[in-house]
Length: 162
Image (cartoon, rainbow, N blue to C red; front, side, top):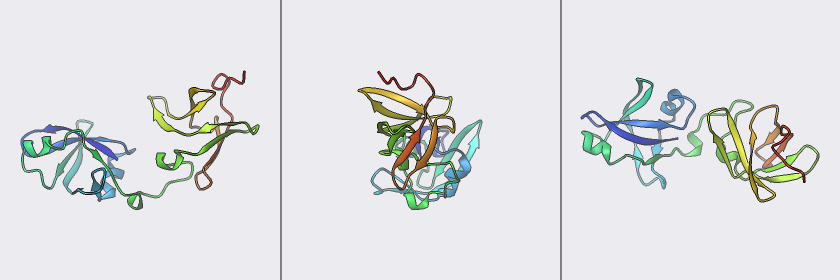
């Protein structure tokens, strides 16, 4: 859901690099853990300040406490995720989905979902090349996460059928 960044000030506050679409979603999750759920973090406050998310973990009483968290990833158990709206997917649900062209050609499995600034892209390997297919209505015709199937019709040039 995010990563702890640099400590801010002297009172234990720390920047949080969010992987959610908004600070409100992050705040609503309420149960935050390290990678193996052996540590649970609570926050006395989470707020946006100067377009940055800043949190005050309950156990952080000073800058040194906050600095120990730097670069640690913040996880949330899936059962605490908010429900998806239609046409919204969690990356975890897309990983491993079989990507098939609408003409029936198997393209590959989703290996990651990235966003380099212009929208989400599903990554797969097709004919020994990593390719990206924009995750939008023009390129992705259907997504069925339960059956792990994605049907696509990518714009010309993404897939080379030679």
